[in-house]
Image (cartoon, rainbow, N blue to C red; front, top):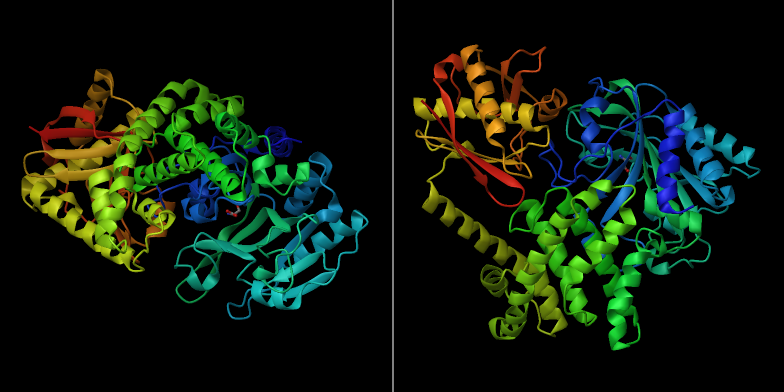
Length: 626
Ligand code: SER
């Protein structure tokens, strides 16, 4: 089966078993300020895993496009990609292990047709330190499933991955790992979980590629969690039933299943190729890159193949980022996108592809994904425009920057030179380092610290020169500024009601004269939308709602649906301001340090003075109280 067929078959399989198909979430998480990108299927479902009822029911299925920028340095081999699709099914307190593991086995072997003798499972061996028992139930279920398939279900105790590599796993089919491998939470094993964070033991499924020899540089013996590529993890069932407390664990109000399966990896197993770039979602990109190069008739070296994989991975990622409203910039998501786009272009130069790399490959991505993601076809023009602009901008500066680099660097590339290249030529810092290495210029090992220091100084300079800002984006604590601050909360809620839940705060700056609010939204607001937002805010003012304040942990706040300013980091407790009717649609709830007025009726009349672009899929509203 191809990936495209596997995706559909998976959704159908779980829909047949009572799951509601949910739409994928945007790659930019809406209400999770802890991370820049959606990196797993469960992220947008956190409140429901914690107990809030999901509007479509307790069994959900989707295929979530995920982006893990932190894997950038791994890309280039045959296995790592930064963008991937995670097949997900969830039980929100509905079914548990007895259903999940047999269904998964049935899907993999009966529907996709994987050979059971190539499948291996892991189970949690328990944590004496945290008094969490071994997952005997999953172990027994796997034993039954493998026995049913005519296989000997030998179990071995692996301990940690390092212990498994030292000991080997013999002829085991089921491998019991400790919490360093078989425990999943957003923040890793129990020790590193903050209070409030949900998690639980997990049970992974691996596919063995016997054609890949074990690489001893990863450890003496191979085992399912070895990173050499012989075993590839294709799915992970997390039994999310615990929640970290200050000194231990509590049970969550419900026992959840959080399954994540790697679509591309299942497709690799189905095709029996240990190469993600050979499957139907990526191979067309490599073919196109090859044909773009064929004019030169040069042979493929391993370095060239690496470069082609980097281009394919990064282009696919930037196409999806553009689809989800990100545009290259020097901040947050935009910066990551810029780095990926520019790295792909630079690798293209290495392959002698000197022109329109991203727009050409954008066409390939769109045609590969057109049936499953019709929105790519609808937005193709916009996406291509974004990529074209970035490519032409970068090509202009690239030539100059590359020429300047040896002069700026002198005998060694320091953080100062990296900063200069960034400031003057828009060179992403990592790119300068890579380019220096490619040109044989030594790199100061401390370049990053110096660079960060210079960036922080620059930011502080521009902040004071602009506005003299105080904490929370407020210029002062005067009555007028405080009133505008409360109006900003009402505005935020009204924007989400009128435009949709994709609206996320991107910045706020309030003086005693006016408020300024930046938020994610892909297009200009219509005059009707602006009028409707004004109307909603003025209604909220007319109702004279009290602004209530309470304290809680950040997780509690997010579980209750509180909004938080994007990019903020939270301590162990946060203050949450609410206004409106907690049982109705009009309810504003935000994590915020204040200050606010006591009642919305104190605000006077709200008027939007201007609505304009603030770059990168971000709109800016200026508004006043009259
Ligand atoms: N949350 C788990 C993961 O990301 C399974 O969905 O691997």
